[in-house]
Length: 121
Image (cartoon, rainbow, N blue to C red; front, side):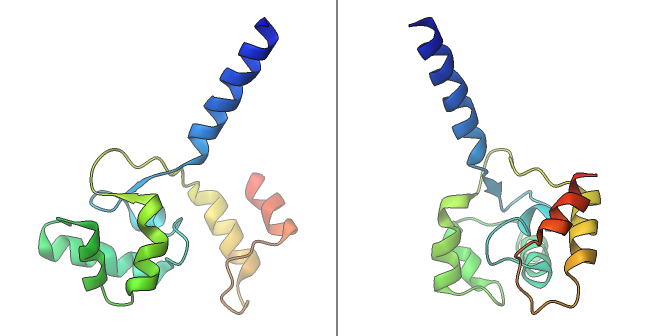
């Protein structure tokens, strides 16, 4: 019984950490880039819009950012918020290694196994 409870607690702890939320009012460009469908240009556009407008009042306001349409917004809804702490962890050293290893690709964000190993070092 004790073993089952410990296993359940460990599983729940890992499950909650898997759901990263990005606060679009405070996240850095690097943190925004962790979102599916958001690359450097869109991340920069989000930060610029936020600076000009004084922050987002609603998640729907993201559609006003150049390059973000209804489909992208709907894909992001589960991963973004307007308040709270951003829980995405960005290892800038690893990001640099992954970008270097994937440069020259067709724009896909799929990370090759060799790049994953380089990112771990």
